[in-house]
Amino acid sequence: MQIDPSLEQANRLVLRDLEHRDIEPMAQLSNDRKVLDRMLYKPDPFTNESAQSFILRAKASNPLERRIFAIIRKEDDQFIGTCGLIICQGHIIPTMDYWIGSDYWGNGYATEAVGLLIKNALPEFRFAMLRASCEPCNIASQRVLEKNGFRAQETVPILVNRSDKQVVVKWYQLNLMPYHGVNEANQQTRDKALFV
Image (cartoon, rainbow, N blue to C red; front, top):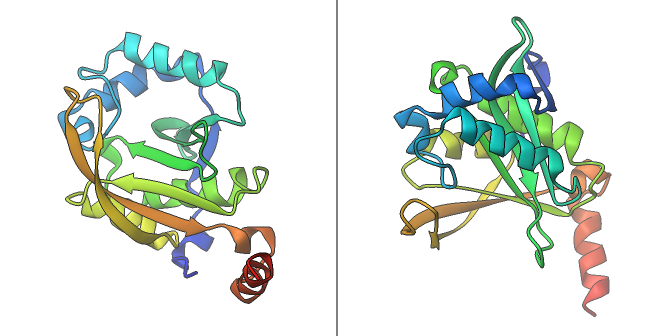
């Protein structure tokens, strides 16, 4: 697994639980056509009521099934987006989701936020793999995933709530075993032992 070395120096962001004060900046940043066009599962338009509902659902969720964090820029305590994990019922591999307001694109914030989530939030869950998806045309999001060690897996159509239409997405997967102290050689040996 190769992780972008610049992530080790990144220290501009903090992830924290969503709070009531995030409603207005979340609505403002999310209700932007550039952002909405890249989100698979967001109301359009994204209003203050949408943001409040999103935050209330996130806070009421079982943390073992759904953890959503506010992405905060340290220098000015500014809310710039969210990232989180969703563990769908019946699935053993969690899915990661993230977005950044378009005013903050091009600064490496999404890459840093995803790295923080992997390093700090995931170890407590002890999952072997993590998945994430984006549309094939979203090259910036693909780079965010690749810089954090994700590998492309498959491109498939899925049904999303954008007028109940199908959208083609590219799935990525990250091996989390190195974060649990298991290297690839040990993992292959263990896998062979399980299937012999």
